Length: 414
Figure (cartoon, rainbow, N blue to C red):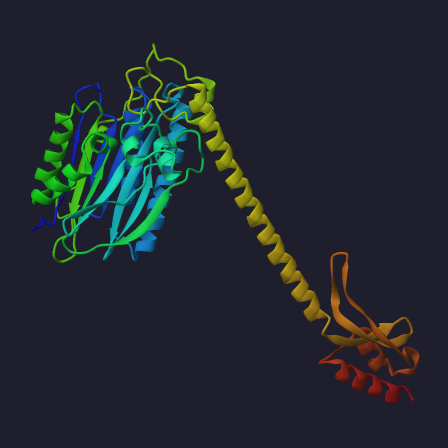
C-alpha cells in the first residue's frame, strides 16, 4: 500500500449522544485521542482540558526516552488540572477522561495510555492493537475468567478501571517506546469505534484506503452504520518512505475544538458514595450507558477487592522501597565505620601518650575512635612544641607508622 505521509483527525457525535465528549489531535509530532465521561456537565470538559495540556508536548525531542518522559509528565499534569477544575467547579465532580497518545522522535514513537481508547499499528498489511484496555472485563480476560469473545458482549465491557480525573492524584499510566518503519500506519481511536467495528473491518479499511482522510472517514461511517450510540473519534498518521510523519496541518477535533464551558445541570443526580470512592469518573446518568457503572452488590464487591489489591500492592511497593533505602544507608554507615577503624593516630590520654584507632571526629553519640594501646611516655617529659603536637594529635598512615611515632616520642622524652 502506498501511503500519503500525512495525518488526520475525524470526530463524530454519534447517533444518540447530545454532545461530543471526545477530543482528537493530529499535530506535527504528537497524536492524541481523549474520551471524556461524567455526563453532559463534565465529559467534554475533561477530554478538552486533558488534550489541550498534552498538546503542549508537541515538539522535537532528542530521544524517544525524552519523549516518553514528556508524555508521562503531560498526562500527570492534565490529571492535576482536572482535579483543580473540579475543586473550582463542584458541578463537574465525577468527570474524567481516557487518553491515548503517540509522540514521534526520530525512528521511534513514545506511547502513553490510560483508559479504553486504543492505539493500533498497521504494518505490512497486518493490524496489531498496541495498547491494553484498562477495563473491568479486560481484567477478567487477563485472569482467565472470561474469553475475549465473551468480553466483546459483556454488559460491563465499558466500565473503566483507570482514567485521568479528580480522585487519584497519581494514576497508573502505561508508557512504552516503539520503533517505526517506513510504510507504518498508526491509528488512535475512542471506544466509539473499537466497540462497534471489528478488528477485521478496521484492518481492511486501513489497508484499502491509501489516503488518511478517506480511511478515517470510512471508519467513522462504519461505526455510524452500526448505530454508533457513542461518540467516535479516529486519528491516523502515516510514516512515509523517508520515515517522516505528519506533513498535514495541525488538526483539533471534538470538544477540544470548541471553547470550554462549565455549565452544571440542575437535575443532575448526585453520585453515590461507593461510586465516588471507587470509580467516580464515570457517568451515573441513565442515558450515559457507554461508561455507566452498575451498582450491584457483586460488581461493587469485585471493585472493592480490586481496590484492596491495588492498595496492597502500593503499600508493599512503598515498604520494599523504604527497606531498600534503609539497607543502603545502613550498608554505607557500616562500610564507613569499618574504613574509619583501619586508621590510626597518636594523641594524649590524660597525662600520657596513646595510640588511637579510628578518626578524631564523632558521629553524634557514636564514637569513631578508641584507644588501641597506652604507652609509658608522659606529656610532661616532652619538649613543649612536641607536647602541643601530641595534644593536637598526629595522624599515622597505618599501625606500624603509629608505633614508629611512639618510638620517636620516647627518644624525645629522655
